[in-house]
Length: 388
Image (cartoon, rainbow, N blue to C red; front, side, top):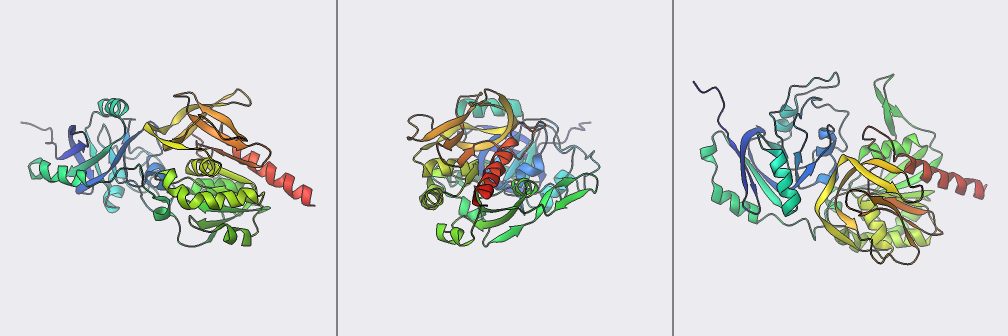
């Protein structure tokens, strides 16, 4: 008697490679750019991070589902990733914070996944052949899946290169953010900080934990949509401007964002950017960006702070990078990836303008990079004292 269930899902890559597995979440087809994430946990945060818009995530850690799902770990209002790929079957939740089984949460949100895939072989394939589009199909029976139809659907999926996605995931209107980080003593998020500094956060796909970090740092935070004009931002009288993370090709988003950022810099307003915000600042300052072969996504990436010589363990999620060659005059490189020597940070000499490619708010175990928020606050405080 065969007690092993029959596989009922297919993962097909753009280059024709096919993996068979077991479907979970919602039945159906889902397509997007495949990428792998090496973090041991944080899967709910990843799926709800707008930077993963239109991407299908391979979690390289085999046991996914231990934390379950809850209302506190959302990085935005909804799931932005298109699908999930795991090695093992989704595990039963074992966390006191769990409010729902991970697979049930995915099904409720109409997200399709496939388990039973050799994620080690798949990750090696991506590293060798580069990021590419893929499609997952999950049916009652694998015989119900039509390979030729899948190929047709996959051929219609656009490349991530050349796509402007920030405006699609951005907020539609201004709003104030008041919530701070998690308070373990009260089992809830902290409310309101000192609100000493007025910061305008441009939302290109912003993560909630970035906003919480700004609040915890003493900022009064006003979030504005991606296509907000410089004049509208000046009208809000900010002490500083934050440029957020987000999805898509920075060269495309830069077509409307660069001029806005240039005007903010020219106005001598302090600027701090993270991830896509880093790339957009770099673009505004005359740098160029390129698509990485496989991208950086995980919670264990070593980054060298060029000024101090220290190595920081960072959280990362990006498929594009600022080119290091021929940096414009006045632009200084501040951080460097020790995985592949790509750029991880810049600053504008003589200005309070800087950014990093990694995520200092994410705290992937260590909090090595969280000083970037302190750096921003020190700039705002110095400006306040100077005015006074």
